[in-house]
Amino acid sequence: MYPVFVLSLILPTYNEAENLPQLLPALCTALEGIPHEIIIVDDDSPDKTWKIARNLAWKNPDIHVVRRVGRYGLSSAVMEGFLASKGTVLAVMDADGQHDLTLLSTLYGSVHRDSGMAIGSRYMQGGSVGQWDERRHALSRLATRMAIRLCKVEATDPMSGFFAIDRLLFESVLPALNPKGFKILLDLLVHVPRSTRVREFPFRFGVRTHGESKLSRRVQVEFLEYLYDVTLGTYIPLTFIKYCLVGTVGVLVNLAVYLAVSRLFLSGPQTTLQGFSLALLAGMETAIIFNFFLNNAWTFSRMKLRGLQAVSGLVTFNIACLFGAFADYAVSAFFFTRGFPEILSVILGAGVGVIWNYTMNRLFTWKT
Ligand SMILES: Nc1nc2c(ncn2[C@@H]2O[C@H](COP(=O)(O)OP(=O)(O)OP(=O)(O)O)[C@@H](O)[C@H]2O)c(=O)[nH]1
Ligand SMILES: [Mg+2]
Image (cartoon, rainbow, N blue to C red; front, side):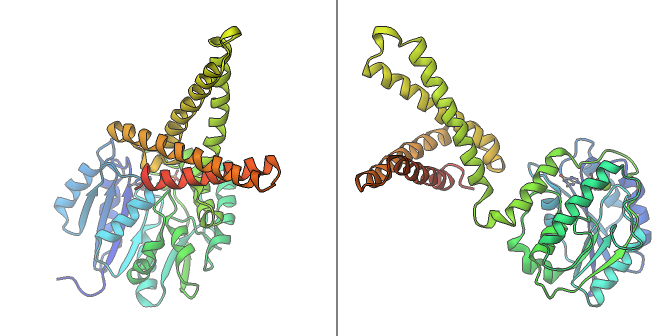
């Protein structure tokens, strides 16, 4: 039976098959004397990290493996590991050998004794980012400076991937967490109560033992999106901004198709009201289809509809846009007939139409 205090160490992995056979025995040595479990959360790595991990887990009952299929992302992997664990102290570290194993017992001890969180810091005195080139160093410094401003509590390295947290504290902020992206620690520091006691311990960030970094451009964009989400995004969702941008491009598509159809096929004596309407409808429907696919791929990429779901989504999107057009017309006409300037009436109508479209599509098209 386990004693009352257990450290649950989460190792998020993606293509770390070469690193685990070295790391796990070293970890077990570093954690000697601390009742612990190690949970490897792997996102179905193509190099079969999960398989290597499972082989190692067969030899050691303290090691567990979660193989996630169809779900991805560092933050959500760590959250899933925390939720699958049973420790009173939860900790995370990279699986590529860059974190100082000897600090683990210090992080655990600090949370076990009296702090809510304990962080391995590269940016406090005595810590270092190691052998990064100047570009990566500058980017990291900038991101860290932006991140520090958002935190509820003081921390020198809110972007660290090496920390421990009290289980009850984690569970109390869990509903507010944003599983998007790479930076779970920052998200925790944004949501924990201001009174949380946070201790930091310096360490030198090592060199990756094997394999490649996953800090891609996409991860960097997700970080910027996260910064938006926790600031302005609490008032205006990022998906709404993206939806408006897509809508703006859609207007251009609408115009281009209208011009192409009317000039190419309906020029000369054929330019009747019927011809005009046909070109108008062709432009509108093309823009609707274009907007649907762009929103599906970009604005709502996290809830992307595929196959038959995409077909029914396109139908719902069309219906929502149709009602949106009515709302636009009704509001514009309302203000215009009450003496508002023409352009202002059109803008107010368009604004209501966009908000209507967005809300309906959030409720009925991309509803998860
Ligand atoms: N489960 C899971 N783990 C991930 C994912 N992305 C990264 N990881 C793991 O998270 C840890 C940190 O990722 P790294 O690529 O090492 O990021 P980094 O340390 O900031 O960057 P480098 O210094 O270049 O290594 C490693 O153990 C990765 O295998 C992911 O999408 N899912
Ligand atoms: Mg790394």
